[in-house]
Length: 544
Image (cartoon, rainbow, N blue to C red; front, side, top):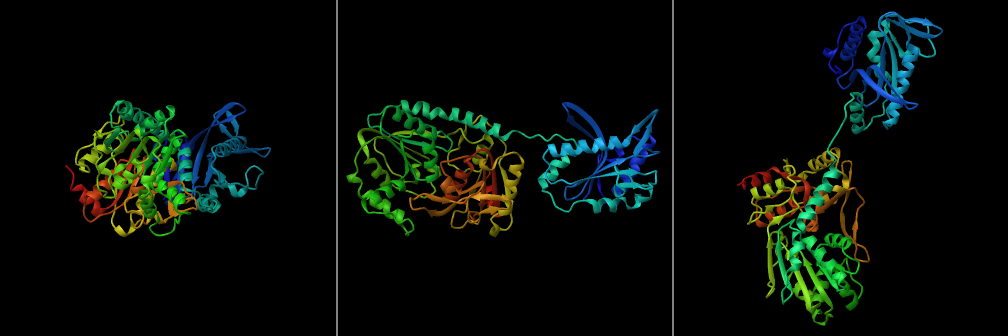
């Protein structure tokens, strides 16, 4: 049984024609399969020669594949004059041949104008009270359904539809078009832009007052939670140094974070990862790097530390970001590059220590602490605190409340929840988010992740680091629309929408808590967590 839009019960049966139209609709409802849809009394409007025209299609039948048939139902008596069909309405004799021609022509024009590419349109003249004899140019006999054809009407319609399937998205757009429903949704790009502007302005707090602090030793250790404004502070310090013609360097652990900072920093500022510095030193000291050799980056780091005493001290400013990812020896080797009257800013967050590095002391350093998060939506921070992911609660300072994070579970841990991740991406795209606004982060890590082995997930192509480097030491990426990364590599960065996937663990240790904290605080607008039922149950037990 086909679905009728709107219900037949809504028909106002005030004329004989209305009763006959209802009869035709009942035949369509009962004679077409369940996956067919029938729309009646469909209003339309079109622009012709700068004038707006209006009309109404009696019946529109939509096949399961998305193609449509237009039915003009003309009940009662019809006369034929000069190969034209006429029907009397009151005292007026209307040319229904021209009427139908105009209706169909305008409808096809609207379909083409709305870019419904691939939609095939058939049209039929239904005469439930007449028997047609002969044929005419305007109405081919196989497109006329008279009283004797009504029993075969549904079969005639089904056999007329094209067999090429249209996409579900196109079918949904066409369905809304026929129903005259205006589809509206929040402008996600505008919301993302607004959140970014407000968040940046608020988190400029660190960048406003920290540079004003003076200290004879020039050493500052900043322990600040995720989203507190460490990036803005680093950029402020780098720009001030560049304007003063000072030599400045920014060093972090993650290559993606370094690339991001490099895009925003003055060109004269040196931005690098610690291992990039080590590789360049290796190239100068030893020779061409052997990127594919096991343990090469550790070898290069060891050589850099060994030769630190011979390094030229030429920096006026050194910023070490995400210090919790650094070994103490790395910090010492970098400090050797500072001039006597220089400044050192070491910034990070102990709660984001994913590598279990030992902490280190900076004697006589000014200690600055902040638990204020300006980046994450308030509801995300609330959930983080309810799960007790950090020893000290994070203070939600964002002006954007946001939505509650979504938690999607999967039963079989061996699947990694890939289907659920795919569905989440599809839902986000349908909601108006762009592919480039979404980051999918794997909780499993590169070695165990199923996601990070894929080039596509359903209809979505994935952009991921292959694990290989070119001859210049640049990481190689796959070509795709949606970024997929590990939590480790994405630390220090953020995205409007984050899907934290492949979350699975047997017990909750500090390591799991920190990984969850890092992953969840990457989202600036919306967060989706895809986790095994086991992990979800363990996490729920932590609710305060």
